[in-house]
Length: 118
Image (cartoon, rainbow, N blue to C red):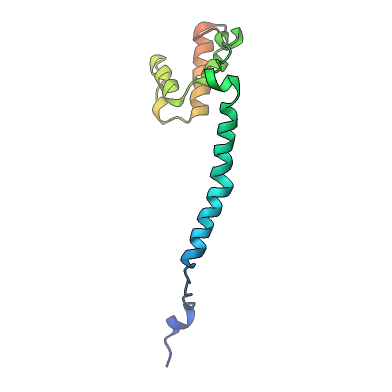
């Protein structure tokens, strides 16, 4: 008699590995289609005068310096947590970025009346 557990298990499929030559061909195609165009684009960008001397980014506008919303948006999560620590916000270490930003905005606007620079 057959065991009922054997009838329920599907037969295991045998996986056949790809031939080594085919794997090497895929690797060569990946280099040709991905890396070579990257190298060509990098070489073309070095040919522009801006690429040689390093272009400077424009200075932040006055709005970026005045509005705390924009300043908080440019901060990383570690910087936001440091600011929350200085502002004595409880539980800041476990908060997600959006929730922490909202709490900081409320605290900053309440403490300073009208929003100004941090």
